[in-house]
Length: 336
Image (cartoon, rainbow, N blue to C red):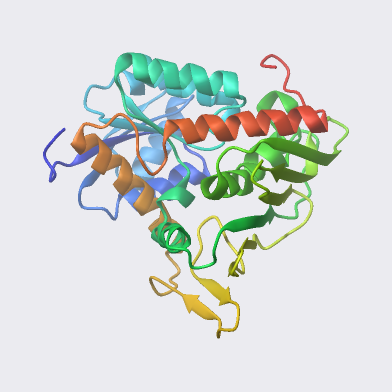
């Protein structure tokens, strides 16, 4: 896939909300073609295919994985099924973009990475934050020393919901709780800035099913940097983040995982707000397009992983999430 103009053919595995939004993003990209969708049921796959004009619908993941007309599969199942779904596609020789949290634990993540590397196949976690151009610009400014040396990162991601005991977010067997659904974002954000932590502490309130619904995390680095993070399915935090350095700070008022703007505060200077594009109603799909574009760029270049979302970074985040779960006493039956 070395032709820089070649259309990349996508398969969509699962038919939920994020699969729909990602498909809608792909349909606006002239170098992307959605050619197939696979679901656990043929009726579900057909309905999704009809909705988006997708030519082939399969009633099993295996049939989608076996489709030689697919260049890359987007895995959009709940994270408890990522190991099985992504593994099936890799075994069949398909490149994979897998939603986050990448897997339910670091062991499964290592298995997928080892499989992809053994087969020489492209694999990437769908951490859209890392592909966002405003986040990339923020990283470049920090590297240039705009706020000095980063000493503190704070980030929170939570929404308020009333979930019955039967909901997947309260089901340990499905990797329920706030941590994997939402906590993966602040942890990934902190590690994008500071790398893998040297010390990890955490506290959480657990539901009767023993999954976390409100969690606080403190990460520490031997050079003195710290991160204070939280995630919740009981409180709407607005997803703010602050990065504080030795000579200033950067504030993201909301939506740090796909920001529209950030403000730089430097000692003795007027704050400066940075935007790379105007805010539009299509912001989510726009961010997903950056993610898809990076996958397609890498495939055309013959790369097996993205430098923006490296597999080593994904594995590092999964190790941190495992450590947090150990601290808060959350286990997932059948996998831990």
